[in-house]
Image (cartoon, rainbow, N blue to C red; front, side, top):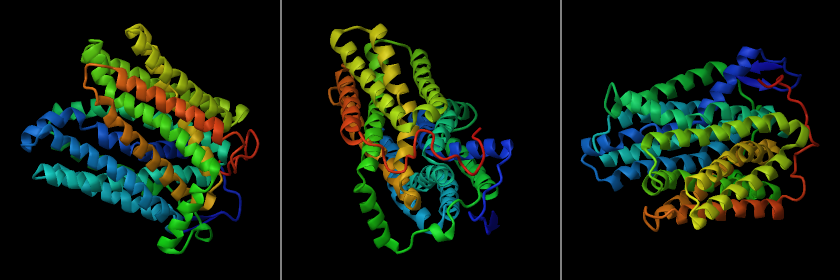
Length: 426
């Protein structure tokens, strides 16, 4: 294998990476894919002080979250195809520079509306890391090995929703809300340095797509005409929507209705996030034996059981002993669904992995963002909307899997799949 300006030419088998480099790459790609929870969750503890400082209403402050979420969704549709045309490194480095700069500008925002605009661009820049990290894994690994790698990444980015609010609260102990965005700028700069010196190009020039906007539209059309691809992203998107409903409604349901303390809620939230990580690692160990398709089926079945369990617990008035185990099952299922759905969705599209990754990520954010506001449609005095939404989308994910993915998706070669040229996984 030769290298030219950071481009790996895949004319000869690559030498296995050292363990240190493999572990370093896991943390780098995990950090890139965690831009979403880092950007959305880290400053949640600072929202009251931010509103007071910028003389903003609660609804205006919520717009800063919405703007970042929209940026993360739209940015993937830009960065994904760009990485198919120009390689992975260049769009990634541009996105990381943009993320560091816009985060620093957020720290200096003079008004709430300036912050809303900057958060939009911050999300768009951060989306490059999210979408390209997945494409890099697809470039390097076959379907089954990719599923194992995505499960490994969940050790890193699965902890982000737990640690981000705690880190934000710790920053507020020594500075004001603006300091949180300074920390985010620093994280962006660290990942920029890691990508610059530790991530070689994984898409050779001969495999890149040309043709500009027309080629991008053609790539999206081709992806959406692939039945297996659509089945994977819709199944994953619906399960992700169930988790969004849980995130949007669980604090009100558990604290206002079931009267748990904020400290207990934080503990329960963390336990459910640990369930995602645990099932992700179970998937990593089982996928070579059973294959990603069967594990995806198991994951959506677990999600449906959990979602229905939440609804039954609410309808029967079972209280915390009934609803907590059901919530844990529904949320933890993401650990089985996400790595296998991602690997299968990207497996059949090696030359458009960036575009495929973009559609996958955007679908998750769009479906999740659409259902989240419905959780509070009946106010904070009832858990029924959250339970009904979780049951509906999780059962719909199972139905989608059964109807659409009954045959093996294109690109999944047997149970084990081909071994990677880049050595064993960490």
